[in-house]
Image (tube, rainbow, N blue to C red; front, side, top):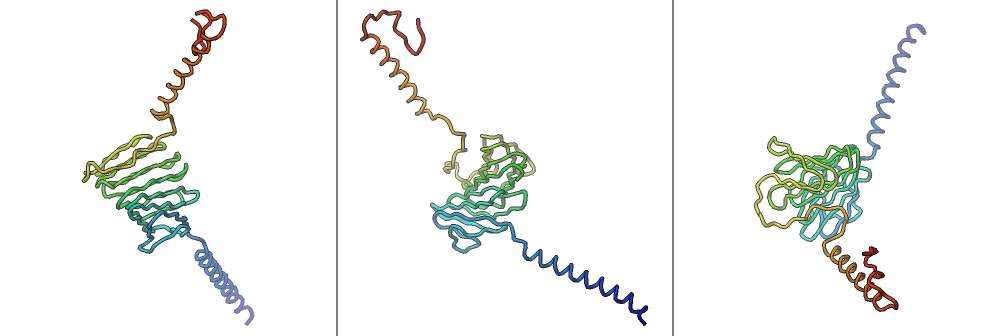
Length: 234
């Protein structure tokens, strides 16, 4: 009798072990936190049609909409950051190595570190960055067409089966603009001297040189050869 029950006990033990393994795997899957971002708002912003405040959690496939004179920023931690301008609507999608979504109105600025790609779809096409290098893209549909501006390394825009390269510091427009005079944000540039600042430096330099000549001419025993302008002698 005992010999006949031995195989049954072994089989029962195996079945119980498999059941326990299945239970723990299901429990682990349910307790694993979903990837999420943190929202920061200015003005009136909604998530999936519900009014949102700063600090709200944003999950994958969330639809974010901003009203006039409003804006939203979604901080995705190591994945990067997404910024929406006024009168914008976007269904945000992100995974372990990609951020982006579907932009239906307004403007979105995407920032991603190296190792994270960008993919933003509009009615005219799809703007992408491969993630090999850190990237920053502005995707704008406020005028009816799609403008893609790369502000940090290059990107691509695929529209109607045609792929165009967007070099860093430049922009490419696809589709038909409905409002040619529609105002848009200019492509972000690296910090530098503006024309006003350059003019101020020139004026300051000329003024300093004149002051040096006047001071030198008023001193004792001054000869033409002893006057120095801008560090150079004649």
